[in-house]
Amino acid sequence: MIFCERCFCDEEIISIIRNYDVLGECQICKSKNVYTYDTDRFDDLSGLFDEFVSIFTPSRLLPDYFPRAEMKLIKSELLKNWNIFKSTSEADIYKIITSICKEKYQHMPELFDQPIGLEQLYDEEYLNGHSLLKTHTWNAFVDALKNQNRFHTNYINLEILEKFCSYIRKTYKKGSRFYRSRISSEKGLLPSEMGAPPSSKASEGRVNALGISCLYLSDSVETTIHEVRASAFDYVSVGTFELKKDIVVVDLKRINKINPFVGELDFMEHAINKEHLMKINEELGKTLRRSDSTLDYLPTQYISDFIKSIKYNGETEYAGVEYNSVMNAGGNNTAIFEPSLFECVDACTYRINDIAYHKRKIDY
Ligand SMILES: [Zn+2]
Image (tube, rainbow, N blue to C red; front, top):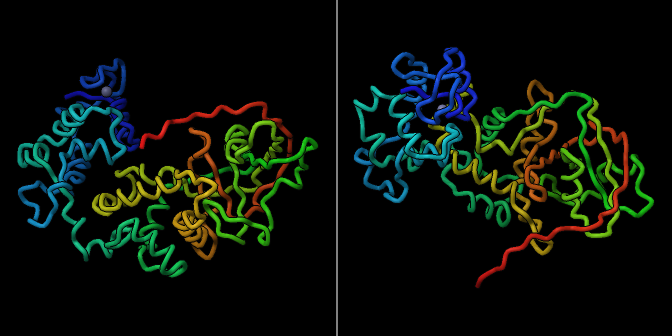
């Protein structure tokens, strides 16, 4: 079978296909004059995918206690949980994977044609060593943080969290520009008034606890005005912040999209943590209403505080975390742990003329 780079979104796979330097037509997505991979001629992908699919066990070989409801077909698992294929068709994924793994398919067709499961998801010893939340669920972790032990919870494997963070590093160069808004009067605010509040006045947010100063920045003027939740006829001052030196942040918006084929990441360890990584992503994207408790910020505050504490060779490794804007779809926010890394170089003031409300009727 011949498929092409456009059938994939995994950069590692795309680069392997491009390396063969063969242009042609794709039998799956029908793209023409694209880099292609012929499974009859090449086998680089076979080794990778054989090893990857081997972490799953066919239903016949799963232990009796493995819940049947948790079993699924490998094509659905790949489509739903892994950011490898561009196609959203399970049939396409099945065709690609069985042609890449053709020998494994002959040897063990049930891995591809019958439901499969991850046996280690129910192996307590394995989970305690390799799962982000050991044997706990995300909800139990959140409850423990809220109601039992805020600072020393033993529900989480911090070394596993640190490992996943190392795969979603993002570098910003000195001179990069970000934006931050404050509601103001018609007179506006000066650049010197646009920074993060001092620790004594720092209220808590998605990433920082009460009393810990943190500089919340956005990638555009549009996003920052949404983030400050300005109302119609408000005046909003927007500061432009310039980065004083190169920094690395943890790009948490990619935490559930980590490339499985990159680096030393272990397929099984990655697979059993998929659900937790998705939960972290969901948690960062949650909208809090004014009436919600700020305790709901605890899980993201806990994770960010840990990221802030990571040191390599005695030096703080990460300057902040990045996450999707909940208020402006497509926008990004970056929370910086050390506000002095940025300088506000300009401030200008906008008047909000109107706001569009988008609503959905709640049916009881
Ligand atoms: Zn294609």
